[in-house]
Length: 154
Image 1: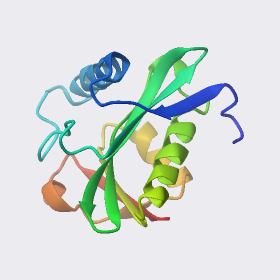
Image 2: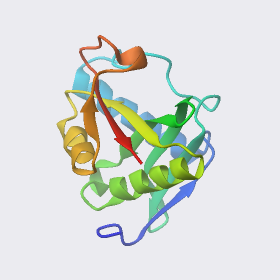
Image 3: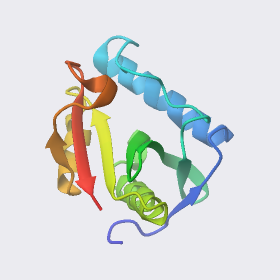
């Protein structure tokens, strides 16, 4: 993958210490961007409903993560996609996304959906660049002013 040299992405348990650290860092960043901690409609992801979770390491340091939550037969939602600010622009996010897409295909998932928000224009640009298209808000995000949803058929 161009731009992803040196990035190792592997499946890890949801409760892994590095996974928990990265998810906490994501929450802090989103709370700052939105000025509140009330910016996630629906049930927060947990070990009980995340089918698979991955960590991205560069030089042995966990710098990115993401997971898949099954929605229905053939569809899953990308959850907790995050890359440490100092690693952004280095291909880590692309490596995480490609791994999640590969794991989805392995699970016979043919459609990936995701939610981000208007205070995350960098994420919106990233997903559009990676072939995800804007869709009407789905599930718990319907009617949500802080939600922008995307999907991609694999």
